[in-house]
Image (cartoon, rainbow, N blue to C red; front, side):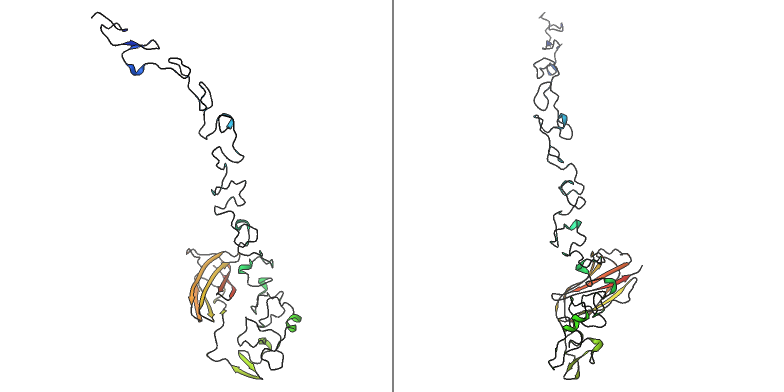
Length: 328
């Protein structure tokens, strides 16, 4: 046949597409753009407008920082997807609303229910927040008052406010004057004679007769009808915590304690701010004398720094705390 295609090839297959291009490759035929123009380059933007300019950027924003085609704006402090613009601790609470912006834990925790969240509470386990103002949180405070003044009778009242502190008087924790001590004289043995200064309570002394050791003719013995009765072997061991030795210490110290009954017991080390450092004992113990050593490390095996530490013995019925000093 003498019939030629658009390229002049006899019996060829080339054709002219809608853009006037002659070839025999149908795959490159021109198409219409969104405006209907053959070979045009107009496209629809993200809002469906042909030739428009509303395209979403890499941060999910439309032009002008809007969130949609209608010009909607994100809520303050959030992006268009509802994510916080600033969330330092990654707890999904925006910093602007997060009372504890650097605490990744639950920012609503209030362990001691004192109205202060744990992350801003200097004493998160003390609802009274160091009531005596001695810089030691109440949950690990040795006594009411200035801890530095000591508590030789271990009645919970520091010597600076306790004038019944010259001996183991075992008075109540709120007895802080000599007059108050004397006003509570009692006759615990029923012999018709009031006991000396000091009142027996649940924290009794060695012999439990209610008489202060400094005025007791029978220290370590019961007083009955004017006679001293030695304690028998069958007498129960008191719940007690001894001073560690050596003290100050480096690197290891020994702590001795006794339990008056079979009970679940914990012996825990805290720093002066109440931070839990190490658990030395946590379990069910038989009554009697016990001994444990501390090597100056925390629960993770890390060596702790020099300073004053609190060691606290607790059972289901009693809690006793004492101080010790580590020197590196």
